[in-house]
Length: 267
Ligand code: SF4
Ligand code: SF4
Ligand code: F3S
Image 1 (cartoon, rainbow, N blue to C red):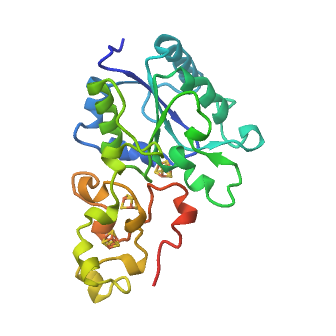
Image 2 (image 1 turned 135 degrees about the vertical axis):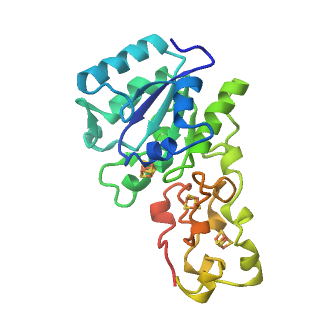
């Protein structure tokens, strides 16, 4: 059984692409094996667990009974609200029913990714399924949002480890995002910022300015209006991140970015 130092985690998948889980699987400090075996007790995760079908449903119910009030509920994916939520069903139940069944029993709820935080691409106009994020449904307890598409795995690991270490979740902004990760704009610590300040811009992808690593603002970079620690923490051990790889930031940590940050490319 999980000790208080090794909190049980129930991870729910709704309307999503599993990119957030894939991103977490590629973390290495700690790696996912250490996370699962030493730091948390990942008791229910449809991508990683061996059980399937009815067996999986039974595991979920058993874990809920055993760990009520103690487990961390992580949600990946948006939730359909339209027409009673019939556009997303798992094991015969709507995502809406499952979330309302599981999340209120958790000690803490974490929405991982743009989908679970703010509805993601499913919620983009015209939002045919009435997709929303977890905070639009779960009002009985605070929901920590770790947006991004996918989010940086260290931001969810940092949130869990902070909670384990200090016995309380990290401080968040008004959108529920931990300030340690989402407290500053991409533009504030972008390595291309000196080019912005000096007026050296990429005018078109592949042009000489692009080859020299100039600022991507004129081709659509949304770094000046996007809050995230990507330039500092980067992704995986190769240090890659969108702007570092020559692509403008598309604002994937901001609510409704598929509608509000488009067009992603400008020239
Ligand atoms: Fe996939 Fe992005 Fe949604 Fe994560 S936030 S599940 S990566 S679409
Ligand atoms: Fe700002 Fe984007 Fe230019 Fe970086 S590339 S300095 S984030 S506008
Ligand atoms: Fe997303 Fe922009 Fe970071 S697109 S991954 S917030 S650089």
